[in-house]
Structures are given as C-alpha cells and as structure tokens.
Image (cartoon, rainbow over all chains, first blue to last red; front, side, top):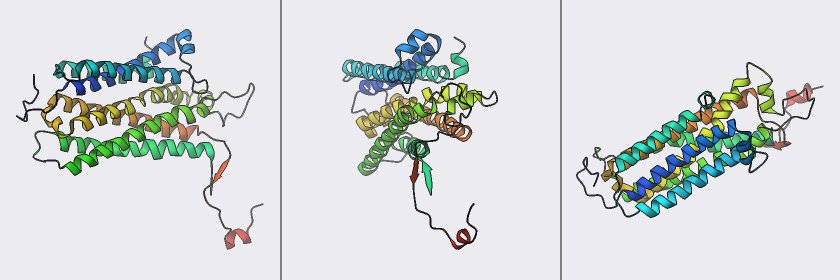
Length: 113
Length: 199
C-alpha cells in the first residue's frame, strides 16, 4: 500500500523505516512516563532506578527509557526496513502513546494511580 | 562582573541549550512543512534540504545537551539535602520550595513534571531528524509519515516549552546557587565609586 494519495507521486522509499522510527520514539516516551509513575509508587522500584545517586531515580528512569527506545527502534528497523507497513495504524498507535505519555507525566494525573 | 558557577551552568542549560532549542522549534515546524507538504507549490532545492538537515542535527545536539546538563549537572545541586538542623535553605532549592506551602507546588508539580517531560524533546527531535535525513523530499509522498513527523516536532516544542517555563519559574523562586564565583569581566571603579566608597 503506497500512501501517495495527495501528491500522486510514487514514493522512492518504503515507509517501514520511518514508521519504525516513529513508533519506537513513542514507545520510549511511554516507557519513561510509566517508569516515572512506578518509581513514585514503589520504594523498591524507586531504589532500583537510582543509577547515579546525585540525580536519583531520574537517572534510571531516563536511561531505561532511552535503552527501550533504541532497542525497539533497532528491532523495528530490522523488521520493517524494506517493507511497506500500514502507516496509518502505526501512526495512530504512536500518537496515542505520545499523548498518554504527556498526560501521565503530569504529576496530578500520575498521583491518581 | 561575576556570577556563581552553579548559576552560570543554569544559564547555559536554560538559555544556551533550552532557550535556543525552543526558538529553533518553530523554525523547524515551518521548514519541515514547507519542504515536505505535498499541497504546497514550493519545490525544495538540494541546498535547502541540506540546510534543513544541519538545522535538525543542531536541534538534536541542543536538545540532548539541555536534558543531559539538566539531569546530571544542575539537578543534583537542586535536589541536594541540607545538613540536619539547617535553617538557611537558600543553597538547597528543593528543600527551600518544600518548606513553604505557597511554593511547594513549584516542586511537586513543576519540577516533577519538567524532569520527566523534558526527555520527550530529544527523543522526538532525534526521530524527526533521522526520518527527514533518510527520506528528504520523498516525505511528500508519505502523507502519514509526514504528519507524524510534524506532530512529534510539535510535541517536542510543547515538552520543551513546559520544561523551560517551569525551569525559569523555579529558578526565580529558588535559584541554584554556590560553586564559587566566575568573573566574567573585571570592573574598573569609576569616579563616583572612588568618591563614595562602600563601607
């Protein structure tokens, strides 16, 4: 499926690589928001996320989220690089994850859990 | 003219990295739209695309510099614990904010939100830059990828805006201080200062 409905031109590249980058970025943001909430609610997780003492749990939250982002990106890139994927569905998933991440990092929302 | 070393780092983090990034975001949105929207008659030249690539890579560097300097240089000063029984909390911004009910929310909402949401900016803009570098003007032919790239660029602007706003406000009410003085220039006493020396 080629998504060239507006321009009428044929894409040179498949959309798989771009979709992999977009979905993995959203996964990274969502993992960060989830870990921030988990760290706030569990002393055990909070302690485990202290990778660098002066920065506290933020060091672990950000490092783990970045690792999840990069690993998921590598895996999706490897799987989709030369494929044409359903970009609409992937985009929708990515946008839901991104909006959820933005909402979940807002402390009054995070405190609801 | 001197400035405390910690304040200088805060200035570099907030204004040089964060502020510049925020300014660049709106330019990136306009540039990306112009270069990739299939509905505009504008046709990009290789030089314009090259410029956009350099522009986005600069933004990626600024965004990572802002979050890394914030998390690993300034945040430890912000969250430092005062010694037991300390009365003067001016060197311990987090404790200073938490000690006043009127200021507490700057930490519990402002800093707590800022320290996490700020990371969305470098993650998003890195993705935007990589997708643009890989696809270039071919993004015109991938309507859905193009939309996602623009939305993530906007999300990165929002995330950076939240982080910058709260950073500026928190630094206004509980500035990070200390670390010795960095002399930016050597002042020369003028004739009035010589006539009326400070006692």
